[in-house]
Image (cartoon, helix red, strand yellow):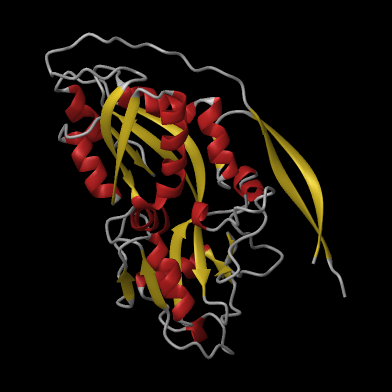
Length: 319
């Protein structure tokens, strides 16, 4: 029997507000890059690599004299490189901390944080796991080690021990859980594993029926689906509830619309952190990601852009 499902999807209208300010003059640092030309390296949390790769490709197509070299690492190391002056741009899931911003200002720098997207932290499980609703409260209990067995969530579950898997122990996903879910406390569940990257998290969950993976929602979307309503079919994406008891009626998946209307509780802001006193190529690329062209890439990735007129429309999907 065919089933018709109604969804609300997000449309986007963008307005140009992209200002160029560049100079080709050589400076005391020896840099010759401008807003739209030259060579520059920057760092990004690895979980954002699918989006960043597309942004880099379009930027370099738009400005053929520019060469950008992304360094994909964990969020902690990306910010450390920025504070040490090894790079001028880092893409992260948090703003500067007050102490970090002040330390740069004390050195006569003017650090900037440009929001470029809203992301949903996705919880994924094996296809054989039917426990696909979870409350923020229970998720926090898993992270703190108070819940270690699937039976504690569902007495009928036969999946045994809950095994948590992250992309990296110093990644933006770990920081979000510790800062926003555990109130600044560390993850203390002994059954936690860290892989090398997000792709390995997905693979690990595919191969382990008792695993729960924590990844950025930009890794979930089926690129063939222009409505951004289809997630990868080789895993299950959990629905998350703000209420203490999660049910299908009060739980939400990290679709764009549910990030937009605030229903999805595990949402975060992605920033381009700048410390570029010359306002050269790193500055140009950061502002490009915030511009209409860059925001369209964000939109097509399944994340929510930070600017543009949002249009909501209903679609019918027959399964």
